[in-house]
Length: 298
Image: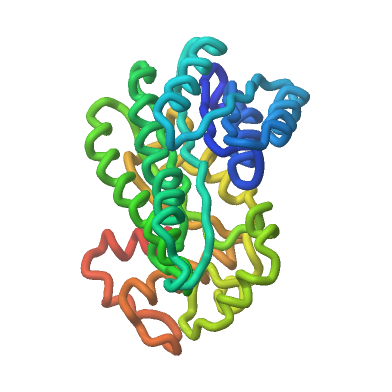
């Protein structure tokens, strides 16, 4: 697989989890990869070592995406090392689940600064270095449309990322820059594991079926980062590859095709507010043949 040979990609928050998986997949596809990290230098260097040992090119660059000087330095070092920029993956993000009574201004600004301001600053800087077009991929979440209890801040940040993606796709599309979002479901990453049993306990209080609840979600166990990294590199309507077709798109990361079908059905049920016990929303809810085709192809 060499779809990205000669291309250069920056992946923020790539020292672990989904970001690390995306960085390694981009490296395997032939891209030179800039592995950005905020604090885990050891993790970033480990990702770089894996890419290099597989025959790829990669460097690690520290930087807080919520700070403009750090963002400027990140891209300056990218150009210094590889001479160009073709792909930006905005993966860096933080989360904390807490009841409304415990929400603080500091936590609100922490999550919005990194999850929303971060992609805005990095994209603003990236477009200065794209030559003849480029690709921006924002890692959002199904929490933007199917939140769980105690996730008011985090889910709001991902809703903002979805809207940011759509707005920038319209603004940057005429300049040959694609802007897409990947919306993973509940994914087994280091951050999720570090949460321990607290998160599942809070989710068990919800009676609403949610596509990111491990207990009630209809599509089984948590997905792995591999599904998301494959989408960023290989999926034709979203990927970083030059052959990608659409300016803006969102899809959910799932672990297999059967789970994907279940997740699409659940998304349709939530979108059209069908009863929870409905076997499947009737096709007549789709007003046009195009909607029917998109739903069947999902």
